[in-house]
Image (cartoon, rainbow, N blue to C red; front, side, top):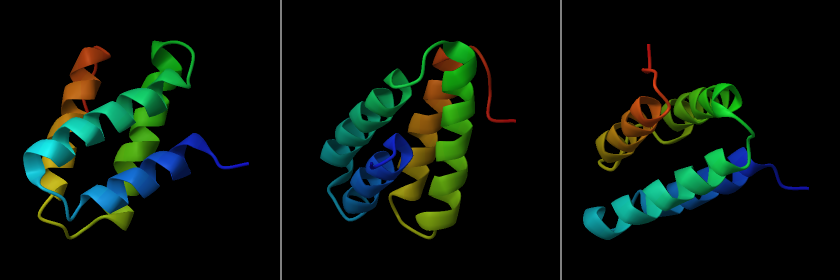
Length: 84
């Protein structure tokens, strides 16, 4: 069975060479879908932290990385917390 993090990372990896505006919308939708697989804000924050770490490890360096990090930071804020 493919794990939600793997599915999301595959999508994000494919987007790193895409057009930024189109890729940004798709990346945000992918991340929101990934987070929706976890019940409750606490588990979503933990899942977002795992995704954040995976993006740092697997998608660096990429010109799309700052866009992804901004999307992730916005998701942290939506969940009422921050990256740190």
